[in-house]
Structure formats: structure tokens, C-alpha cells
Length: 269
Image: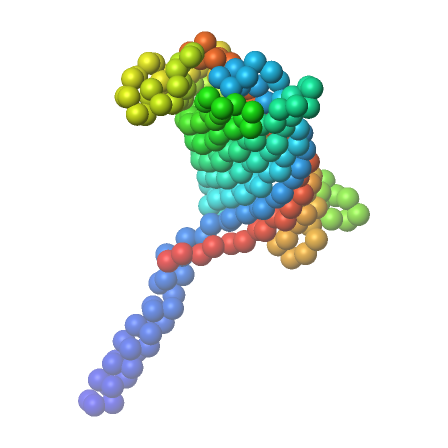
């Protein structure tokens, strides 16, 4: 009798012990994460009629971080990108200079379709941009601040083929303007009037692809250099434009980028 009971208890304890290791496996959620860091240099062109009617051109640097997350056997991808820019530019006479800086956060979701080595994605991203332009020659209103939020339809195309027996991926990413909201002083209005006197003059403006035709593109080539690690070389073009409150602005960034891509699998209980 005692032996029979002990055997049953042993079987029960063994079953519980095994379930502690087996059950969580079924509950594990795997996420494929592609993360990259890139740095690039290139040309910058600036026009801000709030500060000057003159066009400025120069050079700048960009730091770009991208993170793409996808569950296996799922069609949707979450894409997050952080872009930091800083540039200096001079007018055509090389007598006046402007300093420009910006940070842009892109967050969105993309639907995926696969056709053999070709992967297509389409969806939308929200873009939050914070930036400034500083004119070193202006004594009155020397700086212009920027703050905007835009909804941008987004598409990507990636094609993978063999090069020297290793996979080379070519990828193109495009964001186009749709609509949003931005901050802007009005023509002839100072920041002192806005923030010290509290004189609101249509300073929060709804934008469309007509009044703020901002768009962005990136063409990249990615080649593996180690286990889960690739080298990425790309061209990045970010073109910000607006024509609101009788003020015109454009900031064009063209960058040659280089960086590292890491592919990892994250497992959560």
C-alpha cells in the first residue's frame, strides 16, 4: 500500500517538475529585431525667410538609429527611427552663416508581403520633428524654432541576392507627406510677442502635402560581416519644406551613411 502511494506521489511530482520546464516554452514569445546605427556626412541647403531671404548651403552630419521588430509568421512590422542632424551653412557671398540642428522621431507600422527574394512593406509613420536655425548675423530675431507632427505614408522594398556566396540586400525606404500640424510665427511677428506678451497669431498651423511637402528617402546596401552582424552603406535624403503664415522654409539634407546592423531574437515569457 505504502509503495503504491509513494509511486503515485513520485509520478505527480515528476509531472509537475516537467511542466515547470515545458509549459513556459509554449508561452515564449519570440520577436525578431533588426537594429542599426549609422553616421553620415553630406550637403545641407537652408532657406528660412523669417531670418533671411538669402539661401544658405553647407555641410552637416547625421546620426541615424533604426529598429525593426517583427513576430515570426506575422505580417506586420513595427519600425522606429531616430534621426539627429546638425549643419553649418553660408550664403552665396560667404559673408553670413547659419547653424541648423534637428531631431526627428519616426514611429509606425508596416504590412509585409514576400515574393521570393523580394520583400515589400507598406503602411504609415508618425514623424515628430524638433529643430532650430540660428543666423549669426541677425541682432533682431536671430533664431527660428521648429516643431511639427506629421502623418507620413511609408513604403519599403528590399531585394536579396548572393554576392561572393553571401546574401547582399538592397533596400529602399520612402516616406511621403500627408498632413499634420506645426508651430510657426507669423510674418513680422517676434518670439517676444508670442511668448512674453502672449499675442497669438495663427501660430499653430494645420499642414497638408501642399503647404508642407516634406519627404524622406533612403537607399541602402547591406552585406554580412559576421554572425548576426552586417555592414550597411546608404544614401539618406531628408527634405523638409513649408509655406505657412507668409513664411517659406526649406531644409534639405543629403547624406552618405555607413554603419552596423545587428539581427537578434528576443524571447519573452
